[in-house]
Image 1 (cartoon, one colour):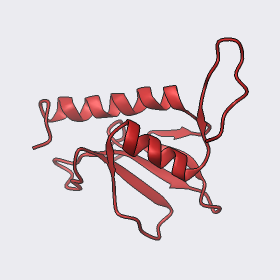
Image 2 (spheres, one colour; image 1 turned 90 degrees about the horizontal axis):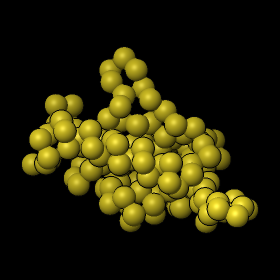
Image 3 (cartoon, helix red, strand yellow; image 1 turned 135 degrees about the vertical axis):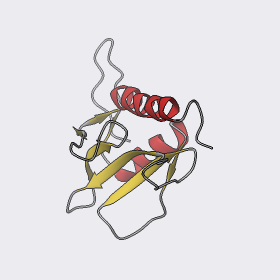
Length: 116
């Protein structure tokens, strides 16, 4: 895992490789990843994979550059048909945690606390 040089009160962790980001999203944030494919992105879902627009559980979509490194993340709940919300790297752990928690909160509000 890549680390910034910590200052006196700074212990920030920054994810620069896909494997690090994937582990954070699946293990720490408990998101479900779509199956591996040859595309230049990976989509993560809340609790279960549901693609249907009226009940989608899409939470974030990680986009890769030509070297296969994550370079931006789409916040799927905050995005709509006309506007996409992206976060550019560096992907700092605590900032990313807050963004993912807000996206999950949006799904819970949309479905009244569940995804069933």
